[in-house]
Length: 287
Image (cartoon, helix red, strand yellow):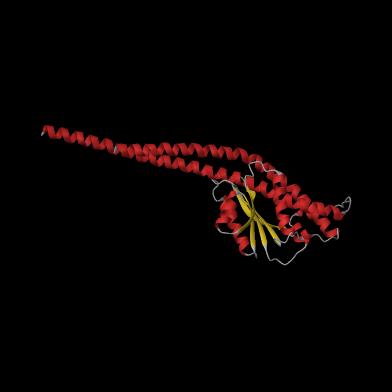
C-alpha cells in the first residue's frame, strides 16, 4: 500500500513539472503571437495594393508575359507552408491534409516543402519534393520569401511545372486559422481580381513604361504572396501553440486533481486497515 502511494505521489510531481513547462510555453507563444499577428495583418494591405496595380497593368500593358499565359497542365507544383516544430495541436496536420486534397486533383504533382512538418509528411508519402526550406525562424524575412519565389519561378519558366499553387494557414484570430490554397502561376485576370484592390479609382503613369513595370512587378508579386503566406503561417503557428499549451495545462491540472483524490483514498484505506489490525489485535488480547 505504501509503495502504491509513493508511485501516485511520484506521478503527481511528474505531472506538476509538465504543467509548469506547458504553462511557460503558453506564455512564450502568447508573447510571440502579438508581434507575429501585427506583422501578418500589416502585410495584407500591401499585397492587395500590388495586386491592384498588376491588374491595371495586365489589362492595359498589352504584353504577353510567361507568368500570365495559360498552358496545358502536364505537371503541377504545390508550395506547402507549415512549421518546423510541433506541439501546436492539429495545426500542421490540417494544412497537410488540405495539400493532399489539392494534389490529388492535379496532374504530375510535385511539392516545395516549407517547414519540417511538410517535408516529413510528404516524404513519408513518397511525393516528389523538388525543394525544401526549413529553419525559417520566428522572425520571417522577405529575403526568405524571395529565395522560395526564385525556386518556384525557375521551375515554372524551365517547364518543370505548368501550374503552381500555394497552400498555407490563413490567420483569423488567436485560436483560429484556416488552410487556404491560391494559385501562384500562371496569374490570370481572375486571380488578380480576387481582392477589391483592383477596382480602385484613378489613373497611373508608369515609368519607363507599363510593360517594363509589369516585367519587374510580376516576380516581386510572387515574392510578396509567399512572404504574406509565411507571415500568416507564423502567426497561426503561435496561436495554435498557445491554444494547445493552454489545453495541455488545464488537462494536467485535471490529472493532478484526480491523482490527488486517488492518493487520499489510498491513504485513507491504509489508515483504515491499520486501525482494523490494531482493533483486531486488542480484541484478541482481551479474549
